[in-house]
Image 1 (cartoon, rainbow, N blue to C red):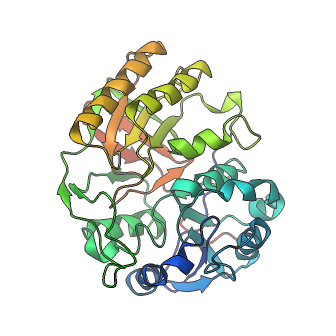
Image 2 (spheres, rainbow, N blue to C red; image 1 turned 180 degrees about the vertical axis):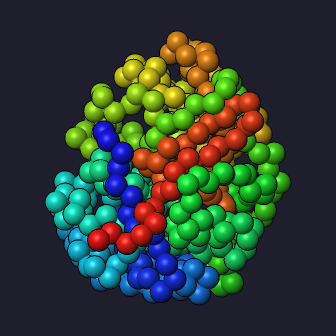
Length: 347
């Protein structure tokens, strides 16, 4: 796969479409949805266009994919962001209009269940963005460190030749109950974080990012929406676990599949997100699983970084699928070595 197309960057005043490709969360918790929209409008300076079924409680796959197609075809829409995740965006994949999507590169951002769409669109040749959704991540932005929105702007609005990533230093493990008035924009208790853990590896390696929620990736592996055998050489694979908190033993079993498929033997590095819902002992056990899995796959030297701010804890970093990430084990750094968005409008 050649270098994917980068969508045009965002500018204040641009239009961003909001879709609900899976769960109708905005219908269940409208105040949290509105809090996220307010951040898009007032903090990021964007014009929000809610697609027709964004607030639908139970839209059909055909209705949800129609919203995606309409947003992709609209020349005024510069980006598309998911309202929240869920568990059935996979049902949209066979309905995607591949030609329409391929013809109009746009920013597509979300995480968790939205992983299915991020992968499908990426395999059509575009950079996609594993990052915060409207209700989970953006709605809480004002309760998070200011470096979170600075990072969002740096990735989506201000392309630079390279962008060094950094731990936020603090995090929350979920949110207060959204059904309680006053919690709609609240983050959970903020906890100090010791930072990324470079578990093994030497020197500096780099490769194009691919990955997402480990459980959701399980749903599509082996399908026509999964990368081919020639895809994996030199990739940086990133994985993160959901709020369902699969135990380290479940992660071990999944990594054994990645080894059996030859993927762990071909990637340049493995980056794993901070696990939501894990206590300190489980986090140490997960680190052991990662190291042992690499050794089982014949890669005792594979660079592995864990506890990275990506996925189901907040604030999260945006990981653009298809953009090169450098992993420097000596300097203990992660760097996007190229911009994720194009610096000028596509002509």
